Image (tube, helix red, strand yellow):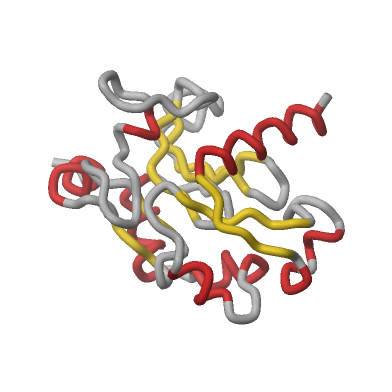
Length: 174
């Protein structure tokens, strides 16, 4: 009856932009974890520091996360938010899940991600597997990290990337 329900029931995830953007499905796959894992559904491995009041729906390999607001972000219930690794802030994308899926498939994803693409980025992206992302040094939210072609890149566990970004967000906002 819903786009989200259909994707959870009938897919193990969706890969967008040559595996750069990965949407969670109902079960783990070679390329992405299940929606259950990233939302700490009982019986699953827990991911630390997942906020309640939102539903994680996907991620990108540079450490950005997508979530549907269930009250965590305030009044915009049902809207998709993006945790941006270059600002460490949640951004309202001003669209619901169905519109988000449409944007992922036929929207201007290239424009959205143009500052996160580097020379020969496909090589490292294609080497990431389920539960992995790419760490940058200097980090993307730093002044030096804005020159992405000059950063060092390393494949790391996605949950470590999430934990590091949250830790840095807390330290910066203190």
